[in-house]
Length: 109
Ligand SMILES: [Zn+2]
Image (cartoon, rainbow, N blue to C red; front, side, top):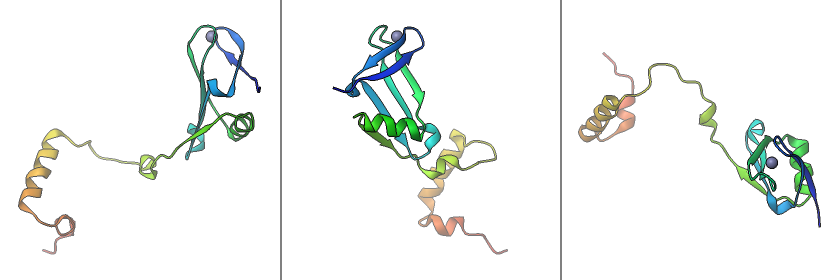
């Protein structure tokens, strides 16, 4: 049986089985992480998993879950956030207009 050695910030070094370790591999590598519930204090320990850690954990038998974040999450937005009134105005506009693309097209004056 494979034993994985990890460190809890409270208890220090602990030993885990692959089944006790959770590995989440994100499409944005900076957000990949592994986590476990400490067998001594029961706190959840979560840490970033770089490519090397991901490879080591998978080779140790840890099942990897994949997490795909949409590219839109990295878009930069400016301007004021939408308000409830903006949403109501849009809902009313949708009642009166059949085509969103036509409504969004620039108007020639
Ligand atoms: Zn602990």
